[in-house]
Image (cartoon, rainbow, N blue to C red; front, side):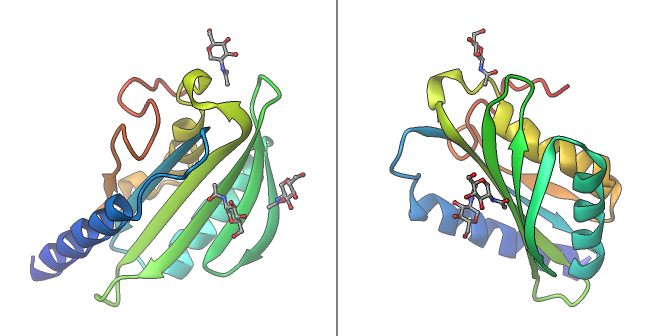
Length: 152
Ligand SMILES: *[C@@H]1O[C@H](CO)[C@@H](O)[C@H](O)[C@H]1NC(C)=O
Ligand SMILES: *[C@@H]1O[C@H](CO)[C@@H](O)[C@H](O)[C@H]1NC(C)=O
Ligand SMILES: *[C@@H]1O[C@H](CO)[C@@H](O)[C@H](O)[C@H]1NC(C)=O
């Protein structure tokens, strides 16, 4: 119970940092999401990497244990840069996963939730959405079209 409170508090702090950090200065479509899970980062990272390899549309670049970088090609042929960064929470058992997706050329008006779904579909497919303590933090400002996205 106490652990969960600490996790939630650190997540709020993190969202605060992202908010004060400001949006990217360019106009390309982007999405940033923070997830919390009460499992070790090594486990979360492996689940995410395995899922991305299973989905043909991601091309993984150099992956460090806690950083996964990839390029995603969507059905329209557009390419997006996708990163997942894991960091342990102050509680040993928890992991904070930060995902970001950015279109290479696509302007923000025509995103249609592409960047949100790039991230969401991986986390959902990896099974992390059912992990203990799962929480997702984002909003329409950090993640274009988040509220109206329908991921297929
Ligand atoms: C993604 O594509 C860009 C442009 O082709 C390339 O420079 C970059 O290294 C690629 N990133 C990954 C993670 O493969
Ligand atoms: C992913 O990380 C690379 C290397 O730090 C960076 O160039 C790229 O902009 C990042 N992509 C996103 C979507 O944050
Ligand atoms: C978003 O929707 C618009 C209008 O339907 C379409 O022209 C555009 O290609 C779509 N963008 C992407 C990235 O799928």
